[in-house]
Length: 321
Ligand code: GLV
Figure 1 (cartoon, rainbow, N blue to C red):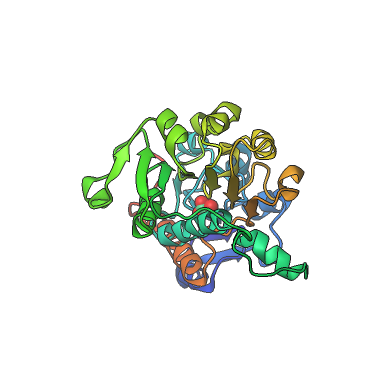
Figure 2 (cartoon, rainbow, N blue to C red):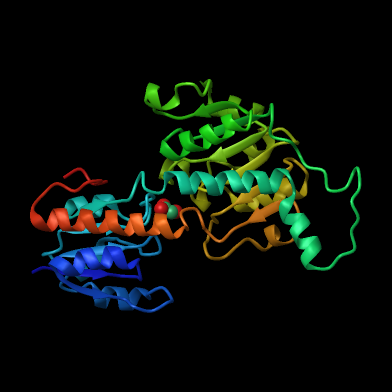
């Protein structure tokens, strides 16, 4: 029996899989574990399940000890994991792709609808009991039909967003260093363009790329200025891909029409400037937040950890070991 540490609460189905084979030590509290508690809890672990709120670096791996074999992140994004530090110690790291693709694309699409149709503003009017009346010119937004969506990062979630956009009658352009599999984009009439062309021509720019050193502040002052004044930005990927300070300035100056954000640069903090603006929709990182998807993520993370502990190959590794 190995020792599996789970550093935050995860759905019971994943816990049951782990408990069936190993001794499990878990953080059982509602609030996130502190760094100190996490470093204490992981000591002696053979496998650790982490959330994106956990920084898995050399210090964390050393606190676990040399017997550690696998870190299974319960998230598709793994910018919280120092992959090189894992590889240097022979620790396999895994993530949870695919199982959250549709749910996250739903969130991005929801943000796009909310911001372009001003649903957030409308909701705030009703809730604040502000007097209102149906009007021909009241709270008009932008229709999506016939507009162009620019997808930055045509991976699984980007493609799922494109499918939704296609169903809504949008044209699709995308930018990516890689080419998506032909079968996955068949029928989408999606055109690959440069980032410059994408930002200059899209009516909605939606971010679906991973957060890497090369994508840090990919959306900066210059990129925002290159967008159409009528265009919207949607970010359901990672906060620091956008320079939040520059975004606030661009929104204030009317350089873009609005933004829908599920992620923030210094999460859970939100730039105070964003809170003052009506033309932004702000969600607390709900991308994969459905009961079904969170269970599937926990199951996949558990399966990854169990496979490595059995001596089998992990299902969805991010390390090259
Ligand atoms: C959520 O943001 C994830 O990366 O799974």
